[in-house]
Length: 125
Figure 1 (tube, rainbow, N blue to C red):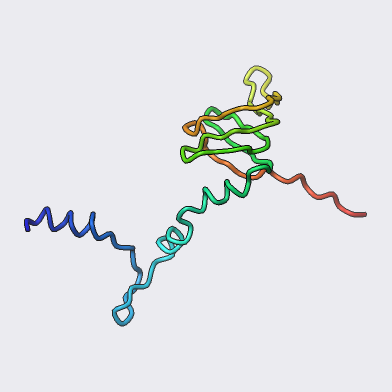
Figure 2 (figure 1 turned 135 degrees about the horizontal axis):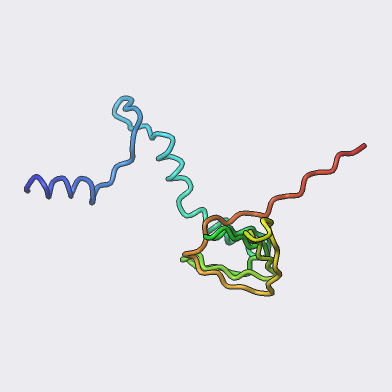
């Protein structure tokens, strides 16, 4: 086996997790590798649990959508109902809101998907 094929075999066919220590021959995972391993596949699960609930989606171009998630696919294409589009108007230098009934967002435009921010709690007097 040539040196290049050995390197390819070692790195491509036998991926190894990063380790921070080797204790009595056992590899101890570093924090990042452990978190990545535990969260594999979780974003789609979280989106699945959010169906029917309100979400806030940040898009490219400083635009945001707030509405009810109706569906999604593996490309992060989203179907949002009762949506409000929030965007910055450079002429008035203010954020403006435009209501949209139902919108399909292409996943390439999505930057962040999150639950909408909760309004601040009112202080009891």
